[in-house]
Length: 175
Image (cartoon, rainbow, N blue to C red; front, side):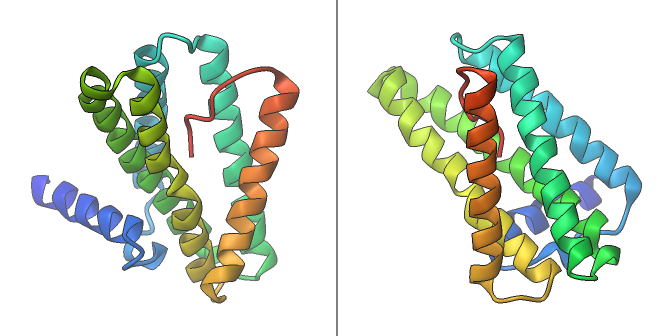
């Protein structure tokens, strides 16, 4: 069991480093549900950790994540690769959890040294890496060049910003 978790962690880390794709993730509905739960838990921790965020921000953040997952799933299905949806969404969620954990670690370790504002900025750069990571995952899922996936991920990111600003002020803490 622990060996399986470590293997999954290493695989997710390799995907974050753009060295593997979603095909390296097991095709498992149980793993997908576990990644959804981990994603929600980490989102709750980020919301609790940042004093300016509240439950409304958490709900908006979760909604933005769901919107992204729906768009990514539609892109994969539209590309006639529907058998890859589960692995791809699991990879996106798992990498998102990993990046948010790095965000939390960076924020907590840098805040006492650099102050909350600079630590927050430095930590958000970690979360910004989720755009190329998601683009990489989508490109591999639909068998297209990396820039196609990156353009899809950028479009999703811009849609998330639009939805976020239309719903009210919030921080984009969820990839």
